[in-house]
Amino acid sequence: MTTETILFAGPSAAGKSNYLFRAWLSIAKSREGRLRTNGTPDELDYIWEGSNRQLSGEFAQKTQLDVSEMIVIPLMVDERKLELTVPDRPGEDWSNLYFDRRFPGHWDELITSASGILFFLPSQIPDDPIDRMQTDQFGGSNATMAQGKDMSLSGPPMQTLITDVIMMCVERRRQLNGRPMKLGIVVTAWDMLHDEDQWIGPLDHLRQEHKLLHDFVSTNADVLDMSVFGVSLFGGDLNDEEFRAEVLAGEPSRMGYTFHNLQGAVERSDDVLLPIKWALDALD
Image (tube, rainbow, N blue to C red; front, side, top):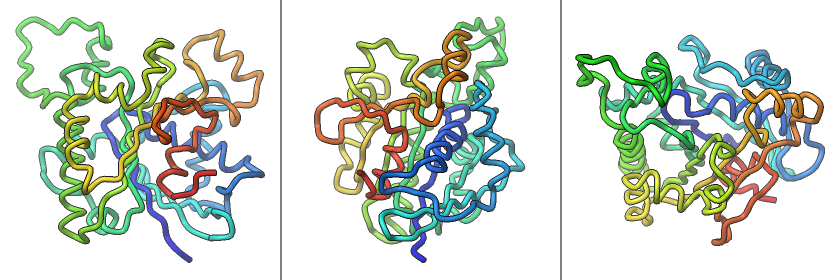
C-alpha cells in the first residue's frame, strides 16, 4: 500500500485539530467523489470525540500534549489505496521548534517523504505573542497588558515564528531529498472576515496580513509548490447562539466552504476538504 503523508503544522490555536475533526465528518459520510475512507483509523475514538463535539455545536479543545502524534486514516483515491498520516501535533511543539532549532521525533523522515505540509494560520491573530494562550490569559486580542510586565520573554512576533518554521521545513527537505515541497497554507476561521475581505482571496490576504511569509514563499517558487486556502468549517461562528442553532438543525458534514485561487481567480468552493485533496493530487 502506498503511504501518503500530510503534515499538519502551525502555532497554538490555529485550528489544526478542529480542521482534522471536520474533515473526518466529510470523509466518513461521503459516498461520492474521489476521496473516500478505506477502513477504520486506529485513533478512531479520539477523532470521533472531536467530531461529535462539533456535531453538538462546539469547537473541540486544543490538542493535549499526551495525544498520540500519529493519526493514520486509511483512504482511497479513485481505485488507489493509501494511508493518510496526519501528525496532529500540539501547537506548542511548533513554538518550541523555533527556539530548539530541531524537529521533534520522526519529523526528519516525515518531511522527507511527505506529500505536503498544510500549515494553519488563524485569520485574525495578535501582532506580537507567538502563543495565543498567552494572549487569552490577558483577555484576548483586546487585552491590556499589566504595566511593568516584562514582555521580553513572550517570544518573537507570530509572523517571524511562522515564516521561520516554514523556512526550516523547506531547507530540511532540500537537504534530505532535494525535491520541491508542496506547501498548503490554510487560513482558518475565514468566516470571521468581512465579506469584502473574504473575496479578496486567501493569496491577497496573505500578502496584506502576513507580508513576511508572503515574501518568503513568493521568492522561493523554485523550491515550493504553494497554494493558499481560506477555510470556514461550518460557514459561521459556533460561539454565536443563532448560528449554532442552524448547525444543530442542519447537516454539519455538508456545511462550510473554502476560498482559493487554484485557477488564478478567487473562487469559493463548498468543499472543506479542498486543501487535503490538493495536497494529495486528488482534486475532483
